[in-house]
Length: 53
Image (cartoon, rainbow, N blue to C red; front, side, top):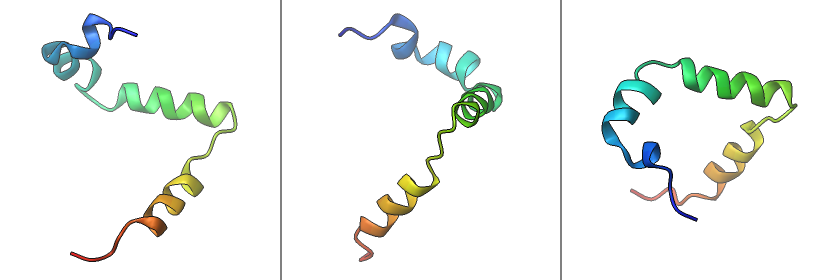
């Protein structure tokens, strides 16, 4: 599968997708409406990461 041009366009990502937190907030709101909660997934991940420096 080939990436869409916007995904690899650094200017687009910086100035549109990540210019503020609105895109992230929209994604989080959608996940909450669908009943998805990634808190447990992150907890599992951190529990399995090595703790050595």
